[in-house]
Image (tube, rainbow, N blue to C red):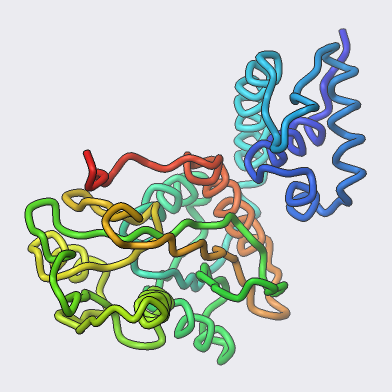
Length: 301
């Protein structure tokens, strides 16, 4: 019986999750050509074509889709086995920083599973705006930071995925039709706030700040209550809101990059393990695979 090397499966999944061989190479520390060779080697082993060669973007063949399901199960067991065997050796205290929206939405599930696999690691989580968290890390107060970035050419940190931004309003009110447009935003240096004001000023559309809060829960509650319109990362969109699109007069806002930053000189096994776990967990969400979680309702439906 021939075995499938796990590194080939891992590269295969990275290509699927990131959407390109180039981005997959950055995630696994290889060049685009090396990733292409690994995928070709995997195809030779399984005797099947895994990707449609004539597609403008990576598109799985039926055989590729089937193998991806097996690959996720195989790697999950592989990683679980290693974590269980190494568990007594992984210990320590990790100071993690993350934006409010992620500590309220995706992170609790991720960190809960990590804590179960690594009970000797103590996590201290700080929630704040991304730029504030990076300032704290620069002062040596945080070991690992999850941060949103709007710089297109940024090379610092480890990219997890690219996060689309969405306009949203209450499901029960029509605040988005008012002029000046009422806004629900966080204080500076919030990236969402900057993108909102930059876009509206470019359109020449009058607006006013109707509600100010640095809390994700506070902003979510204010939007649901009909106090105004806001913008969030798509994965953090709360329930009870409606999306706004171009037909409603709200143009696309583009994307933000979500990156992991490790404190310089701090490379303990516990921190590296958590960094890898968070990156893998985000990549395995529907959002990381190019989809969106159905949490908010489109305004037009």
